[in-house]
Figure 1: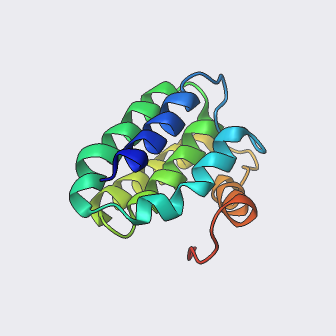
Figure 2: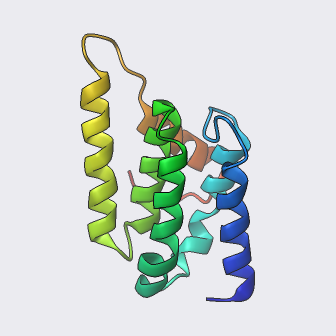
Length: 130
């Protein structure tokens, strides 16, 4: 991985840990994570597994007290891993589904997946299937 790629990923992930709600709609987190997709597409499977996944998992711990931020991060994690690390992509999708089921107890739920995809289409590179 190029040093500039590593630096950009670390900066974006570390910056999210300074925000109370890093994936609030319209936030810098939504914008910058949407813009990371082409950069992440350049990573090898080994780089995704050994570098990116630990960053995602660390940020998941940070967002665990805010379900909407946590759910949107799971969507990004699924997308980030979808091409190079299918097992991790499936793990994030499963975690998303489980948390959504727990939250749904009789209330109308927001579509966090669509919120993340809308951000990708607004700020990021198009061409992501979903």
